[in-house]
Length: 240
Image (cartoon, rainbow, N blue to C red):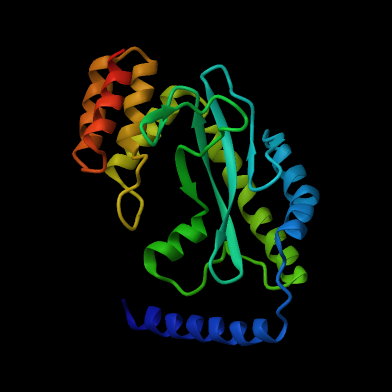
């Protein structure tokens, strides 16, 4: 880290401390019912304009499946310390996840889940570089801060989310994106259970390319995430 970045980091950390004390003095946390009321009025109409016309009544907005079995999804994620932000990505009707001793499909509204997962850019960058300020953080410290930060984050990011969805609407586009992510993985703490390799395996199966599907599933298994039972379940699903 060069001297300029060190100085900026110190200044940013001081801003966070100052804001913390200001928040303590103005604490009136926006609880769940009020959040949902504001989401219905502010978030749902904004996301409906980019095709996410469905809302689960809490923290997930999503489109219908397209002809390739792809559903676009946005989710609000709650942070520790009076805040949150949005993640986004795709759900696939052909990619199951593991729950206990069985595989669960995500083909209904109720089971909608982000499988190909992305954070907002500012959130991801602050996460990767341990920056004290996350420009995509939504404050729940009080209603005014909640509304202001929510509006700012939506204004800055909905166009970016829309562009990502438009570029990830076919199986081939998603495969290309996942192959890029394998070579250029986003920073994570630990291993993501639904890895890029895992998703690639099932997308290739959907394309009837079983050889590639088996290859990518074995690449996923190399991460050592799954139990023997899970390996058996996933292998059977790919081969059958």
